[in-house]
Amino acid sequence: MGKSTAAMPDIPDSWKDSPPDTKAEVGEYYLPGVGRTYLSPEFADKVGDFIQGAKAKGISLQFKSAYRDQEKQDGLKTDSTAITPATHSLHSAGRGVDIANPMVGPTQAPILEAAEDAGLSWGGHFSKPDVVHFYSDPGTDRRQLIDNFSRAVAAFRGEIPDR
Amino acid sequence: MYRFFPVLVLCLLAGIRGTSAAESLAVYSDVCINKDSGDLNGMRLAIFRLGGAPYLVLQWARSDSFEEPELKKISPDDLSKGKMKFSTEYGKQLIQFSGTMMERVIIGTFDNRMFMKDYGYKIIQLRRVEASQKRFGVCR
Image (cartoon, rainbow over all chains, first blue to last red; front, side, top):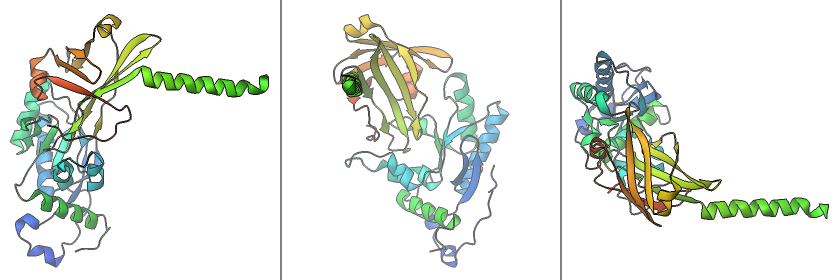
């Protein structure tokens, strides 16, 4: 983990002068349980440390979900009164993963410790706890973060040449 | 007479299917989308009768999908009194749900404080939903 399984495309010149919160980076990674997925490289490094840290504690992490494109995320959504939670998910910014390991009993503490050591935040602290969710929030505008990442994924896949 | 036999069988089958769907299946759920993570959270119960005996299917929603369903037999006595009791595994422990079942809602709790805390429950309220529900609201 931590290394991209595919080469990064050349970054267009226009991106080099972008302020940090608009810079979008993407890498393709393999996560056990999920397979190939797209993540922010900075976040992927943390997930790599998370996997290694858990392994050192005797836990083999398995994942259930990582990057979700907007179409898939929107598919979870419901009525028109929803406050568009789907458009604010860090899964769509390549900065959120869900583990498949049971987050109960004696396995919970070492998993949380490994996540904290890796610099990941835990969804168990949300107002509606989500115990399988781990993420890294850079604190920048979420909508822009998702837009930039979606664009970077599309460019990575060769769907659009560049901006 | 035999010319009408297939038509008769089809009518009977359609009647049975319609009856069982209308009278013996009820689905209750609190599955919703977590506004912070974008994930599905919650549980749903499908209650039905098979050969006169009541059963339920319990299914947890986690991440972007539902877990494998668990089939449980429930007490006809409890059910007739509007009570709902069943056990499920939480880690390596069995935890028991006890609640009251009404036409539109099931209200109850699991007897494990750690579970209730981990999942952010003070009390569990499962509302009656369409069996075909595929889209979900935002967790409150």
